[in-house]
Image (cartoon, rainbow, N blue to C red; front, top):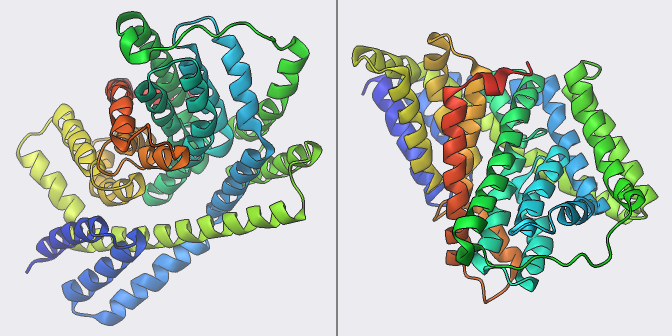
Amino acid sequence: MTPVEIGLISVVAIVALIYLGVYIPIALGMVSFIAIWIMRDNIDLAFALTKIAIGDSAMEYTFATIPLFVFMGNIVSKAGLGADIYTVMNQGFRRITGGIGMATVGANAVFAAVTGSSIASASVFSKMSVPAMLGHDYNPRFAVGVVAGSSVLGMIIPPSAMLIIYSFVAEQSVGEMFLAGVIPGLLLAAAYVGAIWIMGRFTPGFVGGRIVEDGDLMSWGEIAGKTLPITLLIVVVLGGIYTGWTTPVEAGAAGSLLGIIIAAVRGRINLKTFWETVLETGHITAALLFLITAASMYARMLGLAGLPNELQSLLAENNFSFFWIMALLVILMLFLGTILDTASIILIVVPLFLGLIEGMGLSLVWFGIVAVVAAEIGLLTPPLGLSCFVIKATLDDDRITLKDVFLGALPFAFVMLVVLILLIRFPSLSLALI
């Protein structure tokens, strides 16, 4: 067999193993190791490349962004900032049809700016937003769909773990990826709010609900008290990166320290909870390091097999235009989204297209935003929509089935697809802040 054939078989084998339940890094690393061994008939080369992949991943300075931002997200969740911003947003949208849904989107967008985790958002807002919406007679499918749809904002609004993973795979600046994610993230949040308004206007039966009574409105002082901590975190983290005062690593460290101070002032942290947060951060960081190391090995295997060059030649010979290349990318990612998680999609598909995109003179930063948004749609599609499963597990409500969650999330998956098309058509939306 030729190296290209071995490479193709390896990609199929990786997808099949992941689908069968094999841990993603093990599937990536094991198949890549064996493929390199077979291609070069040299096990020493396979071990040498494994050693290089581990060294490059573990010793990379920017890898420190991962534990720092993960820790910051964990400590912010424990400090209860998600509940505070949700309360404020709920008051702002209280007189609008579908207002609690809009408040959930807005709160998720702000919460994503300090956590970077879709799973954390899905878990937190399932407990707050869904019961509140059900209590105001909203359609259960709409209630869970809003939480599922808005939870994916954590994957695009910085600091995003997925943007960090892409930056390692594509060897791009973490800071530039963070800046590139700001406008697309806000655009997606605005599109969700607009979609909820349209659904409330033209399909009121799907939305349901009733206007929230004014009740006890918060004073401006109370609003400031609830929004100031999370505003400070956003200014310190993203403001520091945007102005160039801090690197992403330094911004993560500053945000973590500020998160500890906020949690301590609120009485939400003690030695026990601090140690639990550190352990949780360590577990997540170790898993991501393993994932990045395996992805590095996979990228080296693809390079030895010549698959990216072969794909580029194939598309060039058939005169594929930019439109058809992007259509192929999106279709491939949407298909894989039905069986794989977001990280797997990014790690498998992106290395195949990097050489092609760079050869066309296109920005790899822009491509990263497109790839992440395309992969995010998989969080809402069956049978492996991870956010939908998290919501169902968190609610533990027999009245709401997994089918309800997927059907409720479907309109928001469509909105994401529309936003993705806009990002492909107008690259400046991703590159304006760089």
